[in-house]
Picture 1: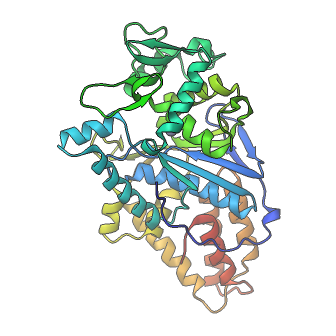
Picture 2 (picture 1 turned 135 degrees about the vertical axis):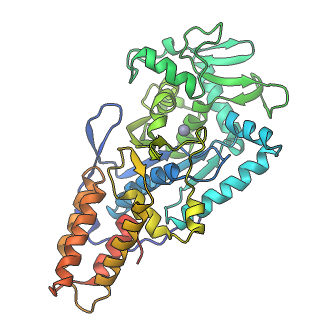
Picture 3 (picture 1 turned 90 degrees about the vertical axis):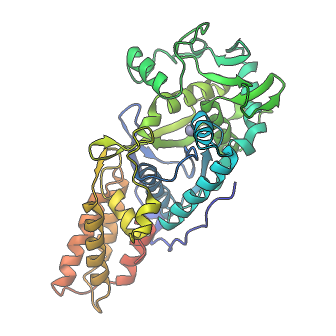
Length: 416
Ligand code: ZN
């Protein structure tokens, strides 16, 4: 799938002197240092049946900050994002609106690209839809079946979770809660004939009126989690199925906190069933964005779209700052005043940067870097910049506006 245009990144001062990024692993709640010289990052993409809302934007912006820091530190980054372009919600929406599901997906992916471009988010190296990756996904399903840990139920194929070591023992939440969430996020715990309610669907046999693909194990379409296993491992580890045991773990997997369970947990379980290794070394999840007290979601219909804000005259920098200036792991109650605040902050920074003489900039750039390395503390970085504005407004001199402008662009994606 065509990605969106690449974004110019200013050069980094002293890339070797960057601290390691310290980030909280969502499953262990422990801080981990991202030390890999070659970072393989996988962030789960959209199901293209509706435009980019602020919840999506906040997630991709948080990972964009991580990616920018990795590149600024002189490390190499390989980033893959998928598109769930065949899925129940997409088919249901297309049917409801009497629209072709492929056309609906294509139009929404195009809108997503425009939003990502406007927000100056670095594009993935591999932007892959499930449909175009079908032969890879099928080969991973086959690899999983070859382990003997799957079983068939009326033509559908499930992973037997009990056959994967510690998969049930290490659930990140209590079993009762896991079953409830599993049911609400695409799972089918109550289906008769399953060996365990949390067994995940790997392959769904052809249903009347639905798109399907042929494989050596029948005609149908893949389950959700195995798609991400296949797209991530095939693009990020440089390995093929000629030797599944040689597949390594990727550096990080990310997404919104609603993907923590079951999606990312089950992705790891399925990958471990095949390779014997963890899917990723660190799992990162962003908080949900609420609007008027309720989580922004398609089912509630309370979405604020990036494209609508753009139409209303808000710029990418303003939307960007309004969404990143917070703890990325915490839920955020969206308010329009956040855009007003972002606009006035940007105006103040712009005005200070436009002066002929500015306050010293070396220290503030170090502070931006240190704050971001500390679990993406954007608030700390912005507050250092505001302190610098104050010093500049007081007439203190000795800095380089260019140096700070480049750092704002490089680390925060704000180009003034
Ligand atoms: Zn995924």
